[in-house]
Amino acid sequence: MTTLGGKAIIKAQVLTGGRGKAGAIRAVSSVEEAESAASEILSMSVKGFPVKQVLVAEMLDIRAEYYAGITVDREIKSVVSIVSAAGGMDIEEIAAKEPEKIRRFVMSGVTDSNTGEALAEWLSESFQNQALIEQAVPTVENMYLLFREKDCSLVEVNPLAVTVHGKLVAADAKIVFDDNGVVRHPDIERLRNPEEYTADELEARQTGLSFVSLSGQIGCMVNGAGLAMATMDVIKSLGGSAANFLDVGGSSNPQKVVSAMQILSRNKNLKVILVNIFGGITRCDDVAQGILKARQEHRINVPIVIRLIGTNEEKGSKMLREAGLSVTRRMTDAVRDAVECSKGRQ
Image 1: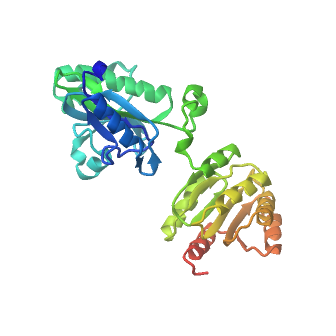
Image 2: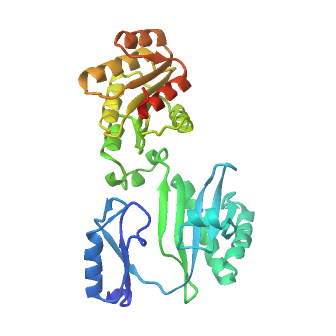
């Protein structure tokens, strides 16, 4: 505590936001208070995440709080910098209720000689102080470099605090790395925390499946990320809810289908499994073989709705129908049947 000037902040280290609202961030002014606060925080859970570590940081004498972030604006297909004078709060809530408080700037690249001047002019609308602008420009530029060099989808500083001495400090930060880019960054891969994933997600990763747990009742097994997203959209549009995202990829390996079905069948909230296969590289008969093997090896007690179309679909459909399963070629029909099953109407 003496090295921190007698005052400190104890912060829970968990993979979620809302720590302050949960009481998992405490201000302390003595060793005794620090020990007591740390002990209480370490016994807490924040949004289901048990607190296993705390961070002890210097307490800043803050005069103002800003928000600064770098992310992708998919509508304009560009990287943008976002700044708000309403820092330290839920930026999503501010953006929804008071959008005039959010400033967006398209980042054309820090090597562009005009970017620095344009960025400074833009930041002046929020910081309105030359000394702060001079500190904010390199801060945002460095955030942008980090964003590009490490394949991030978000680099966020909140709050970007102004101390009573006029110093701009990154008081807290959040970085989201694009999973598809992590393979290029072994240093980032080593930071991966198993707590980020459910046991099913970890198992799926080990077997070469792309799987994300959700809260719905329709288990999805699809080949191709685009088709998987489209399937989830159609489920939602027809009044259903997906229990997961699962992409078995373009492989024609029946064992991957078995592994996928096994993972899906462990979900106690599942009411139906929807299989949606558009076979190109993936062979429909291999998928059929995997489904039948999974039914034989694992107890699957929910209905299975299957859409097969593409390579060897006649052979695959015949195998499934002979085993008493129904198959359709139309995606909408399959999704509609799955939604009806999930609501107990079939």
